[in-house]
Amino acid sequence: MSSNDTQVTFELPKGFVDENGQVHKTGVMRLANAADEIIPMNDPRVKLNPAYLSILILSRVVTKLGTLPKVDNKTIENLFTADMAYLQDLYQKINAIEPQEVDVICPKCGDRFRMTVPFFDQA
Image 1 (spheres, rainbow, N blue to C red):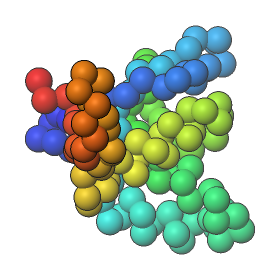
Image 2 (cartoon, one colour):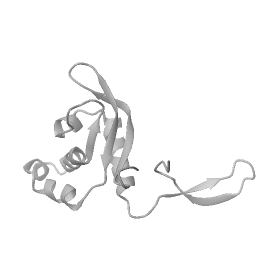
Image 3 (cartoon, rainbow, N blue to C red):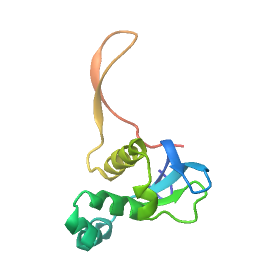
Image 4 (cartoon, helix red, strand yellow):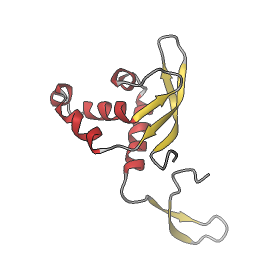
């Protein structure tokens, strides 16, 4: 993470294709705040289709995508499903309270143990 641990850079698996055919893959997502989850709840599109909530939340927290001048709900709506799933997963990971842990097996000795996943670049 960067900017005092409030943003993470990502690379979409497929990339957003703009109206000129340019592919935008690299972006920035910031940590969500309470308003990012509360304000979209009042949007009529969410009341008609609760699944639209994730579109509005992502359009608030994805602050940069390639060289696009802005990221809005239309941008998120037009992502490939693989990219949408990637961003939803990333959102959950960076906003999680608990660090993620996984079961691993040492490839040399075969020991099994749990380890915390180092999600963010420590550099």
